[in-house]
Length: 276
Image (cartoon, rainbow, N blue to C red):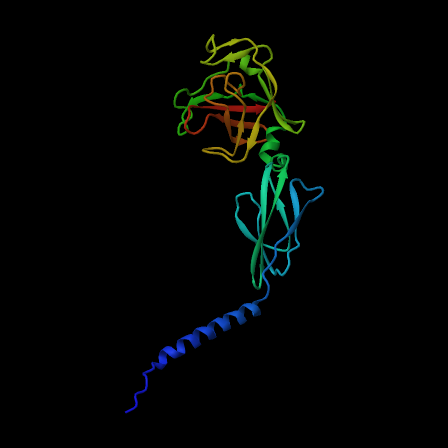
């Protein structure tokens, strides 16, 4: 009696199937084409502050994404695109170039040497602020009140100005590519509770061309903010005993301005000014 070895035909087919799949994958990879090779040029655009022309020189690419390095992440773009930076600093620009066979990434560093001030200079609030000097409103029943963010008059509801406060003049200006504030006390400054003799007219505390920052981003009430360097009473606006040198513009027109000193968590002084 002759015996034939048992062969499971299912297992004979497995190597053939795997070999066929591997062969098929290789054929598919070849059909996809070559991977992209990312590369690009960066050129400053004449006449446009902090603006750069981005030109892809990538090979085998048909789709592009850019990361400008400014915290906004990756975005869809074109082979020829632009980048704009508001603030000075070093930025890593990345180009993601996609080809039929895969993608590639190229990176270049751009050094922006100065802030772009045009958004501030063209801001209508800033333009009103710098259009003319400002004085505390001597005709108001409450030119200065003191309180909290929720109730600006909670601690002091206002009263008439001292004579030495009536001629104080504050001038906001853009000078030599910087924002400058000048305070002219015209001979005498009113001391708040932090300067002796308290709550009385005393020596002139004028200052000239102190740098300040302006921002349309505000934490708490207001439409814009002004920040002076250092701590009061070396520099201040309106009164010497403000909590900090952060001031928020609550409202402003061509002739009137309401300014609130202090952050939303500090004691606030709210002051009414009129155009000189």
